[in-house]
Length: 163
Image 1 (cartoon, rainbow, N blue to C red):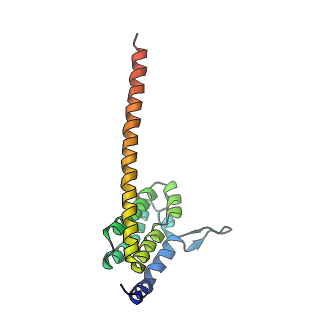
Image 2: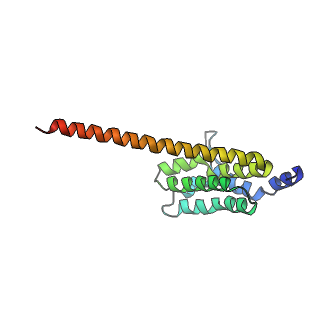
Image 3: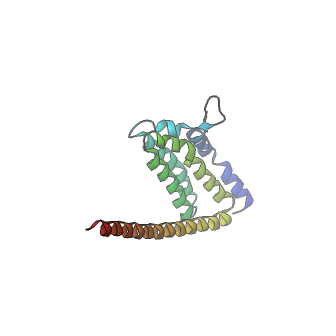
């Protein structure tokens, strides 16, 4: 992609930048420097608030698909939206998570990075996915070892409890 093409590609994201601004940081909390958007406020509406936020967040995903960015980046973006929607559905704590996570800002940054430097972004995405895979394997091994240790501890306690 030529430099002029990537510059014009970034310039054409104005509508997504405005959406992201209002969803993730459009409102300043009075008396603080902290900013939140409409996403955690929508999340206060039980049942539909987080779903509405996820639908609005999908606009960035649609643009990413339209621009043919890598599957790795799309997976990262979808995971950001899914995590935001799922954890955001937890009453009160989920809304605090929504205010901090800012999935739309994360996804817009991923999209802009892919437009500006696709080769570098593709390599970074592969390393990210590899890192997540390694972390999941380590987590699974840790859970198996923890389960085995817990099982041995329970069996040992039961053996000592039998007269």
